[in-house]
Image (cartoon, rainbow, N blue to C red; front, side, top):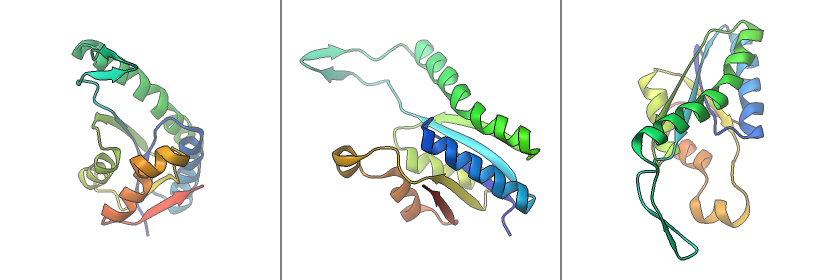
Length: 147
């Protein structure tokens, strides 16, 4: 059935829960896991409460993204190691997590995406849109959504 599962994470508890379910599924199917994180691009200037905030320098941003990605992806790696499921992880910088997830699945030749149902709630989810929903709409491979 499924042999290669992409597991995107945003570091949330729901993503960790989805990762755990993905690893269990992979073990039962004899599949492998690829953990993935898409970090936002901080290269633009932000305006907050009347102040202009400059984005961090490229080096500082790269270090921050690397550290954050390692923390998020280690959850998947540890779970896969415990269950003895083959696992690789990678991350990218992209302002559209849903597009990055779909691209990652294609690039890594995954045949299933397992992800959390949502990261944002309330008005912010309504205004910004659900990344999970966007993946469901744009993915050409099956997406298993965990709650």
